Image (cartoon, rainbow, N blue to C red; front, side, top):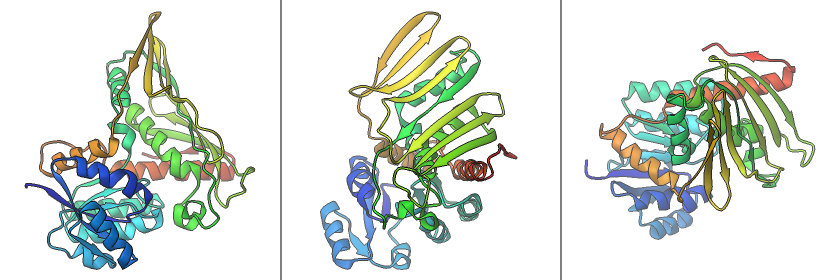
Length: 328
């Protein structure tokens, strides 16, 4: 395969600002088609980004014989229908997070991809950042001894328009936990394995959205690690990105004019700086290698299913005001 030819389903802000430009920086990925409900807008976007064709109907895009893969960047409630339809056409799939509204939908996507032999990955981009890859390797090496506790706040003060699909529970599946917490929950699973118990609190006293604007999710892992993530559409962004504490040391990833790692073990403190990394570019490059059999997926459909399962347990916990046990 010379190039992987992509169709973009949902050419909104993220696709235009980040994912399509990132795709175009790679050597082996090629933007072939764009889907837009507005034909004029679709044509303008195709011309702007050098796509060969634009479509207004998804079935027409999926039937394009030139396509190899699709990038799905639509509202969450559309993911399952679009991903299953793409899989049935034999197209590889990169889907924005979360994979779908719930665990059942995500499992159906995974099953469709498996039945049709296509690659499925999700945009859990933190897995591609060198800071987190370093931390994971240190955890594998027991660099910090037995890990006791981890924390990852994800705050994004971004007031929503009342018509924004992100705050419509039927279209988004939830609020800040679903939108922001999906990232931190996925990273925790990548670090510590499967979750055993979930406890959560939700609030909406600032903007009074129909979904939670602020969430607190506490996780107990099967290996005993405890982790917490705080999410919010109302609070200011925290400079602290990640904290992990073990019996022999600790590590903090923080943002201070760029992401840095503060690693402390046996009284020695090291500060490790990182350069800017285009995580979308890294995922597109990785995706191509997986399709041609040169690499194994860092993130899979099962990760999307588990993510939905944990988030659903968090909402159940918040509603029932009790700890929810997860069967793995």
